[in-house]
Image (cartoon, rainbow, N blue to C red; front, side, top):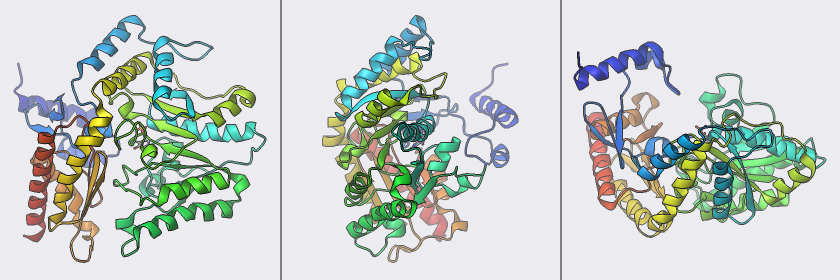
Length: 457
Ligand code: PMP
């Protein structure tokens, strides 16, 4: 018997409920509702089996930067699967896709980043960073330098080290986190935590918490500071211009390694290969994933600056760390094809000159909506702060669930927009066109109207 699309969806939903545990989900609750099945995608749109077209305002999970259905990436994967579907990089072996990608990647990155360590994901990059920076300092005769400083409400992944570096309280509440020697300072979130203050002064105040924390722990005990140039999963939190230069100054003054987590901000999201370039920051280590392959296959990479790399090459001996899928050949081949495609299409110039200014202009217009306390954005990300009182910026009671309500209306209107509490965020594919941006903004406005009517009605 052939099933019609609705029956097919229900069949998948019941198998899903019976056998599949979803990430970051109350699975009991989801099983009652049934999961949303997506079975096809093209360009910036995803589709349900029943044919509903949804504009993917989040590029999957901030990763499908070059859009869905790119033949160049599919062909690169197919060719590599036919040639060498797997081999490892342990035991003194290498293979062309990893070598070529390492060379290509470092040629695009700032001058002092000349080496990469491959992983399978962003979380694995951050686990690698924790072990690498501690091993580096030990190799330099400073084994006591173990402390790593991060920020509250940062997101650095879901493994034990990634979630510890992250500053998500609900994650720390499960599984006995954070791990020892990981510390958090406050985030540079002007709308959420700096209301009524001069943004630049607020940025400096937040950066100087790093200095205070270093002095509290003793600079001789601190290995590194880690941060996302713009916090993504925390709610598209854009630091004031004063923040990153001050962080850089403090790291240099106390000889603390600076790690930029570019898992979201890298590969064009802020209009540069790395987001830190936008802020003029020169990190010692860089974590990359997601957009490196446009999400088509899993891959992560840690770029290692000359100082750390040369210290490790000279004094480090074996680095007892690595993954079966470190530098998987298919993932590396797709990443190289993805970087080539980005260059061929001049995507960075297109974002800087056209797409980002247009997206930000249209997005800012949503700031006039009675539900929106702030519409902000940078590069190819944006956020809307939903508020109960536009004049004072007062939030809704948490129990109202305004963000979740808005997110559900967005889906009804054919748009994926994510809710982080009552902050609505977007991160569309970088290849989005102006008319698709118009569509995105129109669907977002319709969803805001429906949310407003519901809350006021
Ligand atoms: N770092 C950042 C900044 C991220 O946004 C994410 C994922 N959203 C991660 C690390 C973890 O990456 P993954 O899910 O690939 O492990």
